[in-house]
Image (tube, rainbow over all chains, first blue to last red; front, top):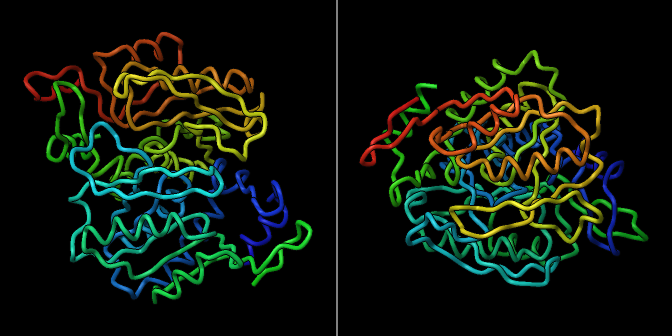
Length: 188
Length: 188
């Protein structure tokens, strides 16, 4: 998606050698027109996959997941990164964050996904795929089926891309970074 | 907003005597059509207020904030409930959560709100107004001006409503609970 790539090149900044900061338009301040365009791309790709629910992980995936779910006319479900006191017996799993260098629990209520659901998972970033693996474990507990994975920005040189494709999921990444050379992005 | 009230009456559940759980359609699983209708109501009310940015607090406010910002054609900014390692010198303040019975830090990057910004704050719930006060302190640090507050569900019998109106902010609550009698909602 050229417009997303242009925004990354123009407004993204690097912290350390490979942490890409895109919080001026994607995961803190949100450029609505750009996210709407992302929603349109995800919709175009997955519109014939009989998706029944768009699932994301709070918080940065919510905007693109919302834009996609609106077009698919299905509910959106955001998995929580902590267990709210209002949840009674949620499904849960553990995610290790390389950025934060710690593990955290993710959870969702049991009754919002069933074996009849066909899930499109949307997230802002894909790097090592740790968040995806946690989500996959949660969704397996519900017996719903993941039929697609939509990622705004993937770092193809990390492990997540191969993991997801290796499992046979249909993966669409709107901006795919092959590698980074001296803080310059080389697109895949 | 009658449709929201109907959803609350039909699908909302009570935990303890006054914690209202609406996670089947608002703050875990999201009913997109309903949130779009909320966005339309917020837009109708605030469309002439020269809003430059819609601000919310992650995560449950993001969907209604997005729906509103899309209609106002302005960016949406979601304040973080923890300090990401990628933030360098954010504005921050502290919020006490009565539900969680603990305080937490909220923060945002300094450069996304300026003294020229006119802010519409959107959130899913208003109870004691603790989250709003934390957000207000953050926004004061940026010298932006809060010109409106849009709330999906307010508990008018708690302190937040009077606090916000007392400060002279234009408050629109789409579903306003006057009080609760034996787990039955009496609308304001």
